[in-house]
Picture 1 (cartoon, rainbow, N blue to C red):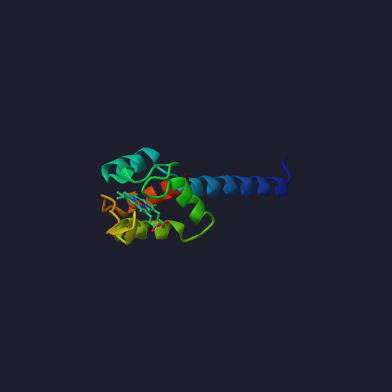
Picture 2 (picture 1 turned 135 degrees about the vertical axis):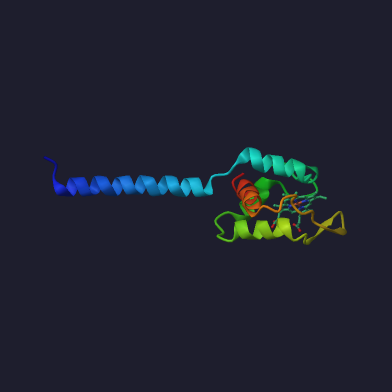
Length: 115
Ligand code: HEC
């Protein structure tokens, strides 16, 4: 016969695992969907994962927002509101991501933040 405390701690461990996998699922990145959206939106012209092009690499952006709770929101805003950016001294509107699906844009932001 198992001791009641033993059974209770087994329950807690079980709950902990369930919560951890739920959190992991909530933050999981669909890499293929993000990369397709980057290609479809022609982001690849100015950005790559690890090379500086006209725009910063996604690694550099990930480092900039590392540990900041509002990183995802900032990126979603950047990608949906065409803020002015400067390329070789010339100001132009940053291109918008070619998707009106909020979940797809958030997935892309998480993809960038997890490089
Ligand atoms: C014509 C070139 C160009 C294209 C196309 C372009 N970007 Fe950018 N992007 C830039 C430049 C330049 C910056 C730097 C802005 C700054 O730091 O002021 C930038 C900045 C960024 C940042 C960093 C934002 C931040 O808050 O630090 C991200 C992320 C980004 N772009 C993603 C994208 C995505 C995703 C696309 C496709 C929808 C895209 N860019 C298309 C040039 C471009």
